[in-house]
Length: 258
Image 1 (cartoon, rainbow, N blue to C red):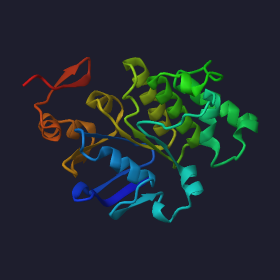
Image 2 (spheres, rainbow, N blue to C red):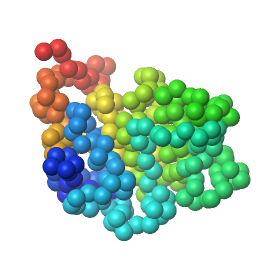
Image 3 (spheres, helix red, strand yellow):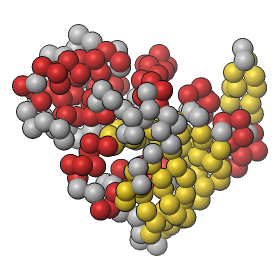
Image 4 (cartoon, rainbow, N blue to C red):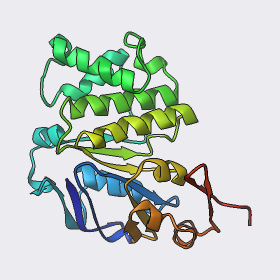
């Protein structure tokens, strides 16, 4: 379980987050939606411990992450950022194995870690790419490899662990976007908690168990999809008219021209 308690943060005089509070319990998939500049990426950076909030606390399984050693924090949460600065000539397998460094300084020498890394590549539909160089990949392929790295960091037993995703589908085609969401959802089913920033409200409708809506540094709504994915709330969140319709038993969200 991860809880964000009254989180506030500013860049200089610009308030980015103002008193944000919500939690993701074990087995829950929380999608964070909001327009550009709403503070979503900053929220994930604070939740991961990469950025310190001006006020408020982040707790994982009841422990304040500000008091956690980096290695211990890495054992209980994994992060997928929007972009990776990795430019070394690592193979894809070596890149995914970076997720095991909190547990094993030499994961490349562990048959168990190598097997886990290959399983994680399979989950993101990258089997057979193990020996290709990471730097040779397209943006979408790199994003999938980094997701595999995060899954590898979570490990075989995801119970009580946290996966934080910052727009994991931003560079992916629809088929691979759904594959990424299925991989994250599978962790939830096995006991992890997931918080994911999503660009597409329809992915949130398909996979999330809770939705957090952010606008102007504040939390507009935090509830189940049936409540948060409301035309009025979404129109307010995105400052654009929103419509929803039911198709084949699923809610479709769209923003007509205005």
